[in-house]
Length: 119
Image 1 (cartoon, rainbow, N blue to C red):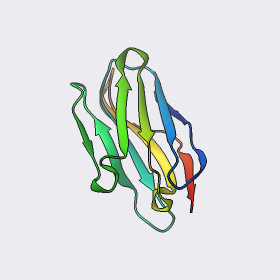
Image 2: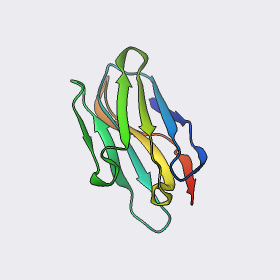
Image 3: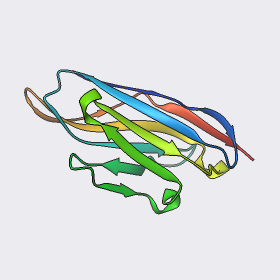
Image 4: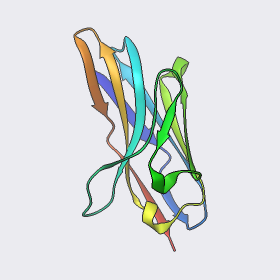
């Protein structure tokens, strides 16, 4: 009922930048919050950054000062600007949204986009 599609991943050298985008579509009444998670090989999925409906944000300590999450509510989009990338940022990045649909509240996930940072 709700689809999330990420884009913008790729290969970048350490110190470089990437911008991830995610668009939500489907039977959406309201999107409460949106977030980016990541999962590196052999590790659990972790929260990278989140943004609520009022624009408040929170970040993992490991990305504070380097990553910025933003949102375009009119377009149902969320972005993640990633600067000063490090090899340890290498992971599959997933978009997440908490969405109000006809039947209630649901959590949706994108398919993921690979980010690889070379040293």
